[in-house]
Length: 189
View (cartoon, rainbow, N blue to C red):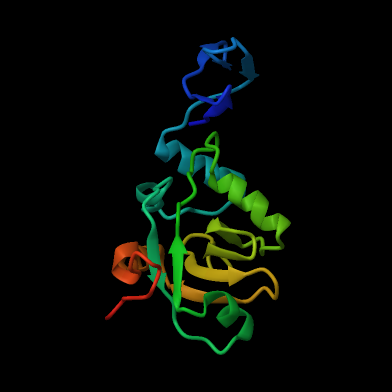
């Protein structure tokens, strides 16, 4: 769902007239009009994504889409210098998984656009990242069953985190399992 900000307030429930959404600020009366606006169920969002990109998002992505609880994934060791520079502690923190709703402010579509601007490969669908580093679905080998990778955009190197999204989900750790309150690693396998 799209949320607009006006006068410091969130406007998330538009009025609809003939397929046009009207977001009205209760404080100043400002109206923002968005034509052809529609809401999507999670399933419709998956179909929309598939039609737009010709790739299948893992169905389990619905479960984490838009999630705000910080998760951590343990990374395999590597000899690639640029990957060690960014991922030297052996973990990747996921602050928020991108929403699959095309109207959402922090959507997977926004991530794709940002990722492309940073030089991310077209077969990578970024789920979370900051420009230099990304957690992404890797569709280079399959349009249906992507691997999950972390990648850096300086040299374009990537590291496989999981061979499937299901494997990735099963390996996620809670932040508190990996770091203490001061950010020190406390993880013990």
